[in-house]
Length: 434
Image 1 (cartoon, rainbow, N blue to C red):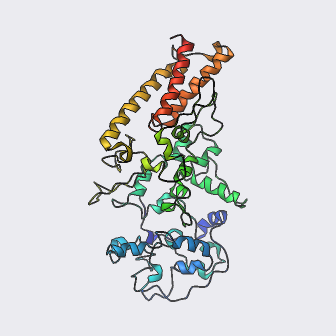
Image 2 (spheres, helix red, strand yellow):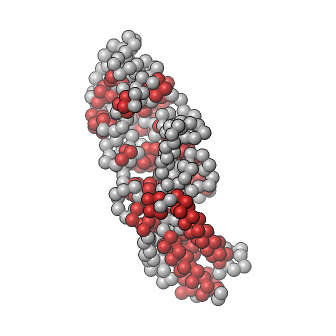
């Protein structure tokens, strides 16, 4: 997926009016007129107003943005002596090469990543705020962020494109089991619409599985304007953020099928004992998500790696594939996985432990599978059991599915995974007479 240079992207015209009205982007009225003087180069029409112009109407957003790294993006370049490097300046200023930023001396008001980098040139809107066709739009697509967060130095967009987050909506739709409620964890435009409704905007159109267009984009996890207390402009503490979707929820009970139970597996909950009561098996890994402090899931799933001379064949790694163990992802992964080394010493030691653990869990799951496969000779038919044994079988099947649905083959919580399989194996052995 390619992305154009941010300086060449502008939003206006009646073609987007319906979207503007639906999203209710930016406040109408009250914005001051923009002076007719040009931006640095002596032009007669000002294209970019700069963040200070936007502040007159959007003071809260401006205040939040001012504390972000975006606001100081030009200072970052200056700190490494690259603030005059044209190959860098375009992503650290507003409208470079398109009637906007020319230099810190000439156009200081357009230095840094500002409102118009994401919302498009806004001087015309500020001069005529009542004109709906001139109102900037909200673009929550990851491709917008990818216009700058790309290439070998910071390939965040490329990595996201390889991730399951990037294909969450596509995967849901192609599954054949898509329901509108699933979009809460598979579609950013659905999440945004639901949030707007919760804030009182009952006119916004909530997408369906037929109309949703965005997967889990950057804005699903990161606050565009800032105004949050988390690093990297994350919307919530990492454990809470990931746990919003990576949880099987309270309805996951024997008789139902557990779905993405990563949080429960990690915390040592979720599975059941033979009598159906909760199986509680914490592990050292559980401490990663036990509180809202620290790196939590990101400790292992968002591992960055910088190389000495990044290039297309040897890029930096930002960790946004989110799965360093995925064998299907062969690019944008660190040569040596370091997420486990904080506790396990070396990458080699950690990898050896992982290989043994996953091999054990995968083989045990494979051995249990025939007992729940209606087409297998070992299948245990619940219809042929009395009520008590049918409940036992349901508990065994739930634990089997729970470990499989977690997807880590035991890595999230070896103790919990093995204990859950112990229960399933014991029940199956009893019911099958093996």
